[in-house]
Length: 350
Image 1 (tube, rainbow, N blue to C red):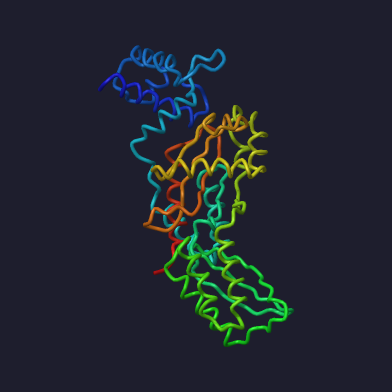
Image 2: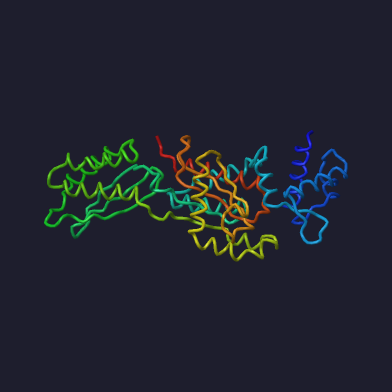
């Protein structure tokens, strides 16, 4: 075994022990708990080298060492495999999520499940309208010269918009409403933006003159809804898990809780992760200072995309936030598994 690989093994052992014991790890503990196949003197030399390279550090006057952010990063980057979920865990995830009755229910279930599985604070982003396609458009006449459009995306997200009839225009009758509904849904079939916008905006040219202006307004409101730069929605759970975190994290807990309340911080983090994720990889880990936000200097974010199954098309992200001292293999496996199950839920039926 090369010196580099042996030192990686020592680092893995230090991370494992520190996460499980919450105590700095000394060379004697490594000898007793791990079959590293080398002498205690060699382990001490490897620990000295890891410390010199900035991967571990000595807190206070303790004889033991703890991983640094750089050490956690090296550990995560060299994970050979994620911790496998048990068959019972997989069945529990599938059963719990597939009992959801709609998208809102699925998102709420997902965030609670993720917090429970990881014992961290969990966050789930609603599917972005800008990345969605139109599955169905409903047109519903209302009183007082108004028409409601119900926009259902292929991810199950539902948006309602109201259109006011032009001054002096007669309300459409049942046949005209039915014709508008059919024409818009035919125009939308199998199309995404910007092709979808062009197709919807062509509908007013082929309907009865009396409803052409209404059709134009409906087309515009649907296109604007699917392309508008609205603030994405986040759902969070598991804040209480952070209060039970180790003392070294607990002292910096208040800024983390404030960051969770300030959803714009998480939105920006997930936006950064999204741009990073497009380059590849299904789970992204941001450790400490990598978050780029000083109150999260002692926290890690583990996030994964979810979206249309089998396409690689991410609709949004989900993840967990917790102390840098976390079970990375287990947390990453849970985040990835839950993201895949949620992807099945939001994937349109063929």
